[in-house]
Length: 138
Image 1 (tube, rainbow, N blue to C red):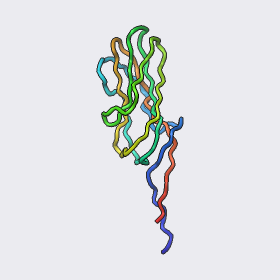
Image 2 (image 1 turned 180 degrees about the vertical axis):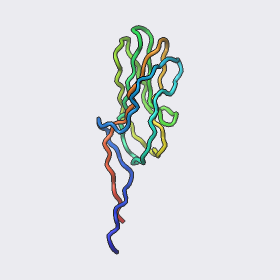
Image 3 (image 1 turned 90 degrees about the horizontal axis):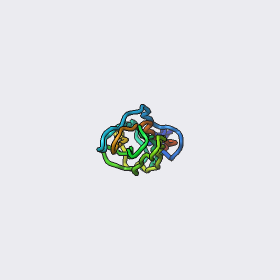
Image 4 (image 1 turned 135 degrees about the horizontal axis):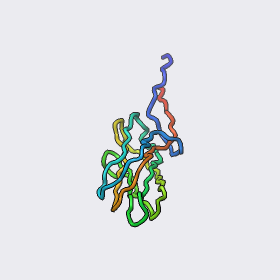
């Protein structure tokens, strides 16, 4: 039997600061319901136990009691922890490492936010990771 060329398999990711995907534009968060504000579509098959660092930023528009909350979703279902702003105008940089189990091409990574009073902002939904392709030789 002669040489059989390798078949490229899925890319398995590990947490990193390297940006795999990014939805950068700043948008206004202005409703007291969990609403989808940012979305990234998965365009390549990834390994079954890939880990990504999910990153996004939230910020209040004014100082005081108004809070902006943010949470990572996959296909409309919450997968991440809830983050919230403090009582300042500081940008809150939210990061969390999650395992991508059974993700497929076309899956959606989403940022949902909620504002309790005045408006605020969200931006920079990012997936961070380092990918390595594996090969199968039969």
